[in-house]
Picture 1 (cartoon, rainbow, N blue to C red):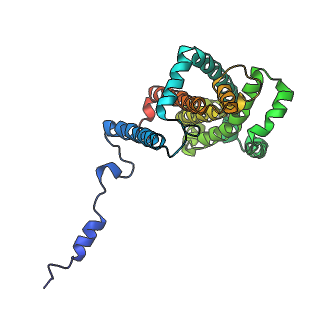
Picture 2 (spheres, rainbow, N blue to C red; picture 1 turned 45 degrees about the horizontal axis):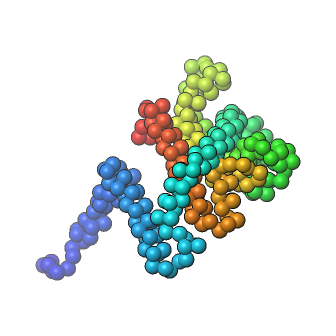
Picture 3 (cartoon, helix red, strand yellow; picture 1 turned 90 degrees about the vertical axis):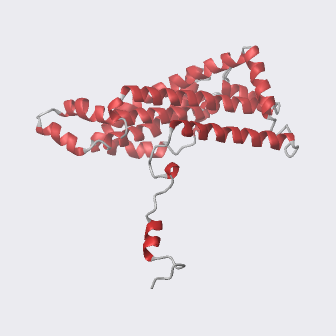
Length: 281
């Protein structure tokens, strides 16, 4: 007779196969409002913790000003017109630096992803350069490009291009070989296969690569505006460092993150519109 206090083998099996909670199921969607509330709630939690730490006196305002001081600094820059002047200069440099990098990375990445000849030709060089610290290249970029905006574009290009070209190569390689075989069976030329099969199939992932590398370009902004910049968010942060203006530094960092978030969502939303057929993949 089975002891009622002792769990039966069947109950253990049932426990092992018990479905996880709805919100923690593997790769399952959760309600949109819950998804948004989680993100907003976590940020709010961080702000509350920040306010508690600074108001309790555990950290001096010189090292970490309270959130209200950061907001006051932001309002000052808006009222004095500083913020827009800096933001417009930085956005211009980001767009140009990322644009030049993308202009060269896409065709080279497509060639590397489809032809072993080009992969063997370029990959060893790119693998070496992409590990070089961009900051160490600043003196050389000044010698090559002067101290104007083109030097800033060059820094952003170097920081983005070498990673982006390898990601585009991997995006192209992810296209199933069976699709290429179908094109060959239909008698399409190599150019027609690239144009009509490979590129359309890889484009959603390439678009996602654009989104990710745009984020990387933002992270190089302060480095790009390190030398002889008359304006820009990065230049404002470096100037504030001299005077220990922590509130200006933190506001600048947060604002760069905010602009990066906007560009991220622009790519996400435009990708959903452009590649509706790829939804759910």
